[in-house]
Image (cartoon, rainbow over all chains, first blue to last red; front, side, top):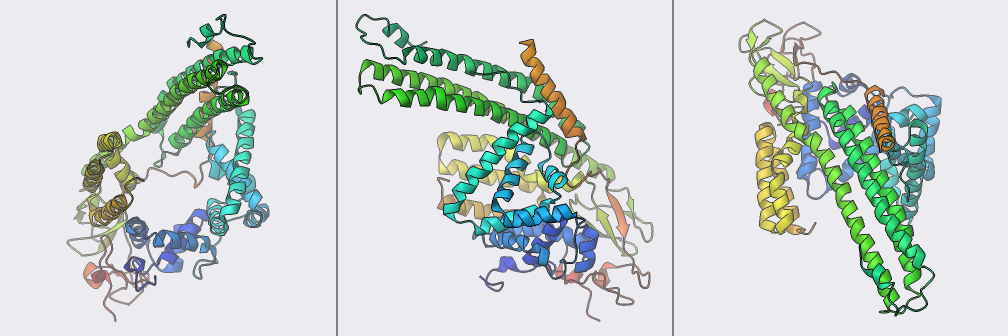
Length: 188
Length: 273
Length: 84
C-alpha cells in the first residue's frame, strides 16, 4: 500500500516513518538528540510528538504494515541520507565484530545467546556486548532485523538450536566467574 | 506414597524385572529432589523479595534498571532450578519409563507399575511447576505494585509545580495548564512568547506506565475471562482497561480509542488467541 | 540448612552489588526536575510568539523548524508560520 492508500503512513510534522525508524536506530547507536535535531531541522517538542505518535499509529494498524516497514527502515537506518554521516564512537575491534555479526550468522547467534545468558544472571546484556565486543545496541538490532528478514523456515531451527546451545554455555560461564547459582548444592 | 510398592511384595509376582531397584530408587529420589528444589525456591524468594522492593524504592534511575536487572537475575535462578528439574525428569522419569515400558506386555502388572510411577512422578512435577510459576508471578507483582505509587507521585508533583514557573522572556507567572509528559510549548498570556516546557524525568514516565497501570487495575476482569472463557467477559475487560488508561493519560484518548477498536476487531476475528 | 541458605544469601549479595554498580547501557539518567526555557531568534534575538507561528521568526524570517507542522498531539497545522 502506498502513502496515498494508507493514511497511517502520512508524515507526522514532516517526519516520515522511514525518518522515524532511522532516528530511532541512530539514537540507539549513541548519536545524540542534538545532532539529529540539527540535521533534520526539528526541536525537542517536535521530536517528542513524533516519537509518541508514530508509536500510537503502529498500535492502531491492524494490517501490521507499519510495524513491518518500521523494522525494514530501522535495518536501513545507517544509510538514511540526512543521518548517514552521524556515527557514534567506535573502535577498530568493534567495527570488525560488527562486520562479523553482519556476515557470520553463527557468530551473531552466539552473541544473542550470550546476551540472554547475561541478562539471566543480572548483567546488563546490551552493555556486556558493548564492553566485550564494541558493538552498540542500535547496530546489533539492525543486524538482528537483517537476519530475521533473510531467514527461511528450514534454516530457523538449526539457528534456534545453536543459539540455545550457546546460551547454555554462557549460562555456565557467568556463574562460574561470579559466584555460582543458588541451587548448585542440590543434586539428584 | 502409592501402593504399588505394596503390590510388589505379593506372592503372585514372578521373575521381577531388573529395573525394579532402579524404579524404587528413582521414585524416592525424584520426590526428595523436588522437595529440595522447592525449598531452594522458597529460600530464594524470601531473600529476593525485600531486595527487589528496596531496589524499586531506592533506585534513582527513572527507568528502574537496577530493579529490572535484579529481577531478571532472580528469575534466571528460578529458570535454572526448573532446568535442573527438567533435566532429571527427562532422564530419570520419562527416560526410565520409555526405556522399560516397551519391554512389558500392555496391561501386565509391571506395565501398570511403570505407568503408575510415571503418573505419580508427573503429578509431583506439576505441583513443582505450580510453585515455580507462582514465585515468578509474585516477583512480577512487586514491580506492578509500585506503579500506583509512581503514578500518585507524578500527580502530586504536578500539583506542586504547576504555578511555579515564569515566562523566560518577560518574567510573568506561567501556569502549566495540564500534566504534560512530553516537551511542549506554553504561551505566555502577557508577552505571547512561546516558552518550551520540559517535564520532569518522573512525569515523562506517565505514558510508559499508563497501560501497565490500567492493566493492573483491571487484572481481576482478565482473570474472570480466563476462568469463564466467555467472549463478553474479555470485551468487558478490554473496555474497562482502556477506560482506565484514558483516565491516566487523557491526552492520548483519541489515539487509544483507535487502538481499542483494533484490539476488539482482532479479538472478534481470532477469539481463541 | 544454614549452608544452603548461605548460597542464597551470598548470591543475592553479589546480585545486589552487581546490579547497583554495573554500568547501564545508555548511561546514567538523572531524575531531572521540570524546566522552562525559551528559544529566541539567534539572528535578531526576537521572541517566538504563538500568533506568528512556530516555524519562522516573524521579524527576520529565521527558520526555527525546517519541517511543516501537522495536526499532532498538542501542535496543530495552525502553528506553522505564515509564508513570507
